Amino acid sequence: MEILRNLWRRKLRTTLTVTGIVMGIFALTTMGSLAEHFNVLLGGGITYYGRSVQVADANGAGMLGGGYMSLATLNQVRQVPGVRAAFPTVMTLAKPGDTNVVSLGVPDYISNYNPSENRYAAFKVSIAVGRWVSDASRGEVVLGTSFANEFHKRVGDSIALPVRPSDVTSTFVNHRFTVVGILDRTLTAPDSGAIVSLHDAQTIQGESIPAAVRSNVDPYQLISGAVVYGNPGANLDTLAERINVQVPSVKATKPSTLVDSFRSGGAVFTFMTTAAALLALIIGGLAVVNTMIMSVTERVREIGLKKALGARTSHILREFLSEAVLMGLIGGVLGFLLGWGMTALLNAGDPSGGLFLVTPRLVVISLAFALALGAGAGLLPAVRAARLDPVTALRAQ
Image (cartoon, rainbow, N blue to C red):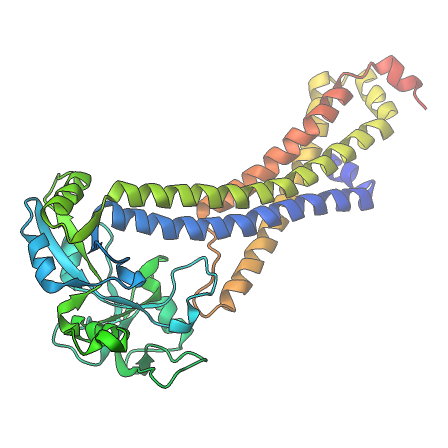
């Protein structure tokens, strides 16, 4: 109770100091939750791409970049020694008009997916409600959770894909699909996906082929790329090199290359968000130092009297340090709750599911920082108070 009375002696000063800590922890929570979401997204990519080999046409970008492979080429890839399974991938943007939109997440996409891939993939995708589409499916789609929430779709509803852009042209074509399933939430790329059969994905891809060459190709023999899984224990980087040598018309990317790019991107993003939050924390820490130094200055005679009556140096040190830690704890709890509430509010207003993710690790980090901030900032003033000579302190005005 004495600690609370000491803090409440200067209500305005204590309130302003706690507010500084609140703002610092608020910044740490909001920026940290943004980094947590981004890192989970990257973690899913590392798990998926680190355990498979991505193959695309050697002369095109592949996947969303517009390159094309043939199914005949995929069969050649399957014959490469060390290849356990290879699945065709056809992927197009679900909202063609969003190519220039800056986003921290994965853009909405349309793709095929064979559920049997779960037997080989390290990253599993499962159905929450409904069922998968089959190879024989026509006009059926399984939506990721973010995709379904964004367009307010449930099993049994219909949706036109690709989504009609605002600047639609006369050549734009889309198709009506029935939602037959919703994926379990993954916090990664599948949440933004619309999964259709290979045939339907090839139909949509074929309509994006330039009109000048469309009549000369069979869209049902073209794919965007392939996902290759190696035999158990195989070195996937070596397998990628072997595919490039034996099938010169494709480009197989080493998993280590993709994983390194994910990790470097995550490190840069985490550094930027953490630096912004730490700047706010430093400002809060300076406020604690200022408050505690002034408290020591104002209570010199009180400290001298306590020491004259038998209080030990450790008692004085503990008293002032406890005051600083308590301010850090109060500011930390309030700042975290404020940040949590703000991120929840922003996520609730985002139909795609939001960009913020508050994890147990972030809770621990935020409160630990608040306590460390209070203790660290209050240590020097506490030591100064504990070392005061009682005779000199009692003579102070």
